[in-house]
Image (tube, rainbow, N blue to C red):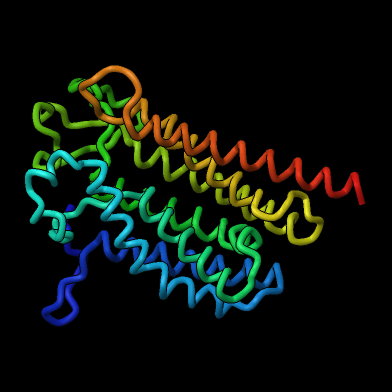
Length: 267
């Protein structure tokens, strides 16, 4: 497995960058279909993307730095070394939601309505990105026995240079990134079905489709956290954060649904 996918002239194209680009293009295609289903202007999605990419990038880096503050406090110059990697998915998501909120405020658009429109696109982009982590071997699961039998057990071979310190003698690990990608893809398919239903019959209150998808992603991350490589027992910080985010999304989901029922009751 190589970091460089190919060369365009003398310019290298990195494999993970190609996967991220594919995720963005696939998300744009799905967003185009969603705007058609909801009869909305697709140009708003382009505006959001142009603002959301730089803000999401900065927030993703900031989230990672905050999560590893003890290291960056001792090495503050490393904060700007983005080429070495280190980005937070939660930070990126927060940045995108913030851009959408500000954009809707400026254009007098319904923020929750547009969250529903973009939900399927975001879910598909997340699934493709997670598959990229599987391909790049950047998300390592628990090690499998060295004498793993050839019984079609789902496993990921990790090249020696990518194996965590102390686990060099293991060759196969739990493919936790593939687990997440598969379940996120299933969540995306469900969101697509619900999008057509929501656009035609208003099954839920505005924003509830997004909250449902966000809660599903958080719960998937929480469940897959048990397969992540860890040397300490108990819940990992990522699992705790995912569970808290899922609880917040579900609480907001039921609160908005309760608002809708009250509005219909008193109409």
